[in-house]
Image (cartoon, rainbow, N blue to C red; front, side, top):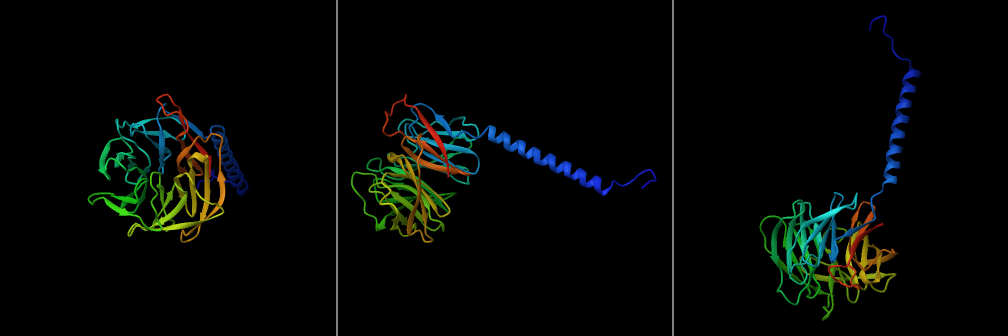
Length: 315
């Protein structure tokens, strides 16, 4: 140090630090205020005549929604509400339930067509189609990703289909046994999620409104006892966050929220979520502190001119 140089005083250093801290705090406050001034939308439109039912969201803020009309898939940016068709689909196809995997693929349940399709979530390219069932008498409804397989429900047959993830492997048809009793001419198995321990799956039986825990090795189904609710009739999509289970009861326009015990043997009703914007919500997906749902509008005319939306509610 030359004689002309001097060290700043401790008071000056502390004062400078205080000014810097104030500037950072002010900047953070401005950022928070800007976020509050421009919050993410809680409702966004889908194309007219879309006939939505499934929705899935990964780690990025994009929702993918399937179409019952032709199997197309729409991608929406949750930050802006703007979106576009990612996958065009084709006549005779349907996209009912769908899940986005960490492999970048969308696993799509094909409804009455009896198929499972794998679609690239980035490009919209169709990668693979699996013929799971005969083309009549079945309805491949929803899907969950569990370890090395994607498990699909069939609302018209007492079976789950295990589609291999990755290279190789064959489709496995897993008959449901144990407490499961298939009812004729109604929708049975519908939404599906993994259990909290990741070893089994939980399936909602829309009619008469029951929850089951199913072992993917044996197919044995064990009915989950409900506490605080008589049933989950019209149960459609399921979302699980930890030991909290969200059940979308479509025609009732409600999402019922249950606490699962450690073994997923009992589901205790905690509360219900309703919203005036619900119009027969079919399925849901979570992103951060919100639940996003598609309005299937099953009780409205299902025409090419019918309007459709997706909505978000706080968890």
